[in-house]
Figure 1: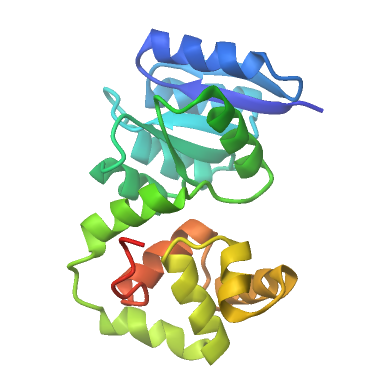
Figure 2 (figure 1 turned 90 degrees about the vertical axis):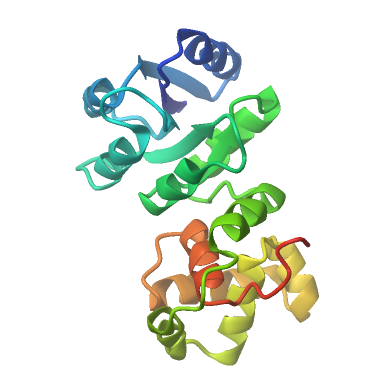
Length: 221
């Protein structure tokens, strides 16, 4: 069964380009397009896609509010934020609204296809280098919030270590190597961290890690 995708962008050329790339695959089908948020909500309700590629800067209902409504709706499709710049304040807002990651509009075709597949499988598209820069840029100088830090009290020391490495943008394999654990054990720790802290996915874990100061001075890693 093909993955169903809706492309939302106010530029026809962008929508057409993404459609051409995705329709070349055997397992992905573009089932709808929209040029603004209001229309996107209609198309998503009608087509029930697995993944929505969402531009954030659109006239009328912007991509952030549209993402929030899709994610809280009856059929919450996964959302990938589309952006022209990797340091874009709208991206972080989109992630907070429930998006599973973000993608630069000039990404390689293979990266676009991979992002759709990864997000559809329930993972997050958090390219470490870009994500670390983005979140460090907007949260790096923010004082640690006591309320956020208190949330971590429910974690074991090992779970804190894992969350800190997630916040630094490390993959499961890299975390496993750093802590001398198996990847399956790392996955278990991450699942427990998400459950204990009531986090939706890895993206929220990264943001919380920065807010709590767990990323330390490793944002340039």
